[in-house]
Length: 418
Image 1 (tube, rainbow, N blue to C red):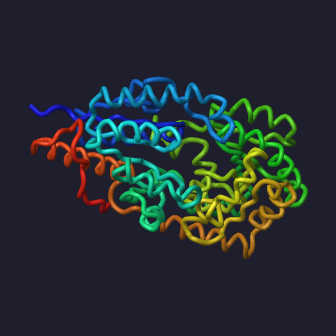
Image 2 (image 1 turned 180 degrees about the horizontal axis):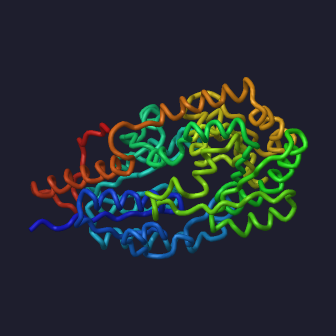
Image 3 (image 1 turned 90 degrees about the vertical axis):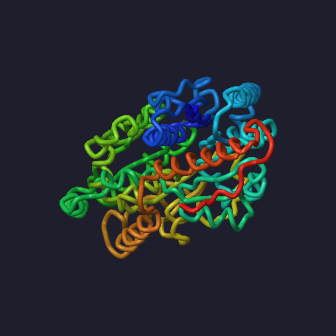
């Protein structure tokens, strides 16, 4: 009797945990006997993963935070690598967080070169440290990309094979698509402005004072606004502190983990607010894609620690806003560091709230983002699962032909067509 398939997954932060949970669910739908081990968070635990350690141990961002916790991070990298080798899986799947997951992959590749290694979520090689793409070829067999321009970027930079499987937000299109009544409400009712200051503590702390002053200016210029602010639990404390100086206080929306209840997503507060919002003030990140898919025009802000700002000269793209990168043009206005100030943000948002040519142009452009993001056929997580299963099948075929799974030749020649 053939042994069950076994996938070792390594996620490095909350967004990777959600992706990992969806991938596990899709893999089990194809292979009910599929086994999992590795590192993940609460969402992956609900799918049956017993994580080697809490995700919070390695979910650190920026330049200084990892240095302060370097001994612990190095120990977790070593522990994860040893566990991956001891588990003897059919495939190793890295999920985002490349500063952690890629270090694990390099150790595993040296010890077991024939094991397929898949990177689910491309590092931003198209924007930052492009040399990583070519370096990845030594320890990654295929990248599963969430953004449609990433396969071409890896080809241009000499990276590993890369397949666009689609962004998981595409599974939420029904929940994010406004009805005709909701579209009318956007234009006719008292404006609803969404405020999304980020999902990481440091970025929230930096942007909350700026966003509060921006809202005060907008209220003076545009009249009364309804303001809604989605809150993820792990930054609730930072948001609550930041709101102390805001007048008026916005309506806080619960932001559920949508992997837990995907069928009820359209009934939750956050997607309902996205469907009715006139405009949004948002931190740069995945939320900009959510807003784009919902057709909500926006202004984007971002601030980094002062010590990190000089490193901007190493960024090789003209925009850090994902909808702009998908389109290859500067559709959405973005304000970084010192330019992310209340006066500039209020001036950018005012025409999006009042209406006119700027609002029409951005809404039209966001519809093109939705078109380019679309991936025909199965859901993104199901497409990712197909690629993982294909690599496992190829690996087992080679092993059955007399090659060692624990060493020997690497798996090659597998088509990367979606």
